[in-house]
Length: 455
Length: 185
Image 1: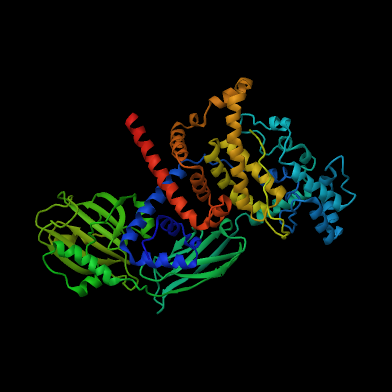
Image 2: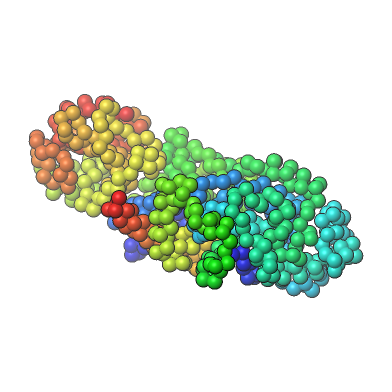
């Protein structure tokens, strides 16, 4: 396919690729897995999205406490002042239609409702006696809906808000004055129903649903730092043993209770499952990810291209495939972020050399992989660059050096902040599930010593 | 300023629904206030409108409460904006002193820095088209693409593109405003 477009990138970031349809979503994911150009664009889009979110976040009103639900419920004549959770028919636009349905269901149910909230209904109006029949009441109800959008001018004025913040909110008196006149009459809730509402809220106050499970390879090797998410932007990252637990607030659960839960990690094909999950329920969903048909060759080519431009020692193809080279790339664009943001993106702590001042932390793409770059100043005013990314799942937890290389000259590097005396040493090592490429204008031994302080 | 919006038209299919409104209220209220605040730029008014939306929702019991609430809130905010313009034109002289005093104390005075920040966001948002702004604010309020599409009448596949454009413009406009501010101060 052609490159992924902007809208698809944003949908991908928002966990909403499904909005394009399943086939297109697959194409986009497959393309992103293999196209370094689009990976970089993805990072740019991510930056824009995060920035926009941050701007909006800082503009919110100081969060004022919500008035109690009862005060809202008491303002609504048809609302759950009677019963917060119940079966109810949604009536349509015409009174005749609504009336016929109610009649078809039988009058018994409705009159029972009315008895329960007799106090409320008794007030309905001068024109209709609530005790007569359900049909009358429903007709009235439907009628009210039609007149509701046309408030009298006097009401509009009556509703003009006074200045202070303590006004209205829970005051039923003011609230009723704020409603069109025909609706006022029914506004006083039955006290018993009010209690029912309060009880309901107490029970349900903290309802969440929990999905948990384990993400492994087909061979059963746990995958750490895999993303597990729902389409709606709720997500988490797996622990070192591959387990995850996703707590989903009730507000993020669709009414149908059907969710799609997806696990993905770079280098593996994403896997999605459908789950049925209601508030208060838990579900277990394990994933077994298959390795992606990731164009490893392409990675090698990219890294060799950069390398042959500078390194005097030609790189062996085998080691290039095993150990990614220093992430020097002409297209690399590094976006400075704060540490917390970088760690969030990495899904874990950033490793730095203890006691060296940190100059900056940036995120970007190196060899097509999301990477965090940390620059630290060494004692003698030189710059140490650390590129950290999540290691491939097969990498062990043990710290080990994968390759050491020294270039004679710093000429090929894009970055002029690196000193130029004595050549640049690059060490690639694995540590705590990360691949770290360290680069500094230091002799290999010195850099090794520095890296022993990496934590 | 308290015009009631035109009646929402909803399909007449009779479907029995069971909705826990106290839960909807608990999970959606703050988001709704937040959303409305970016439309009317007044915390009290945003709260009033959010409550009004809930009162109507409880009355009408729509099937998809969240989408419905945001739709009604959008209409309420729009009517509010029109009303404010009309009032400015015609009723300036009729205002009571109290109202003038109220209008003269902007939210910014409560917290100057917060006020300035909000003003910058407000002006940046103003540079967006109404549609882009709506989509951005609805996403920010927690609606998913499908809900936003249903609400705005856009195709679901167009939400990503619209959001991308809106985010770019917001960031550009906001950065430009910050630049100006820095140059001034």
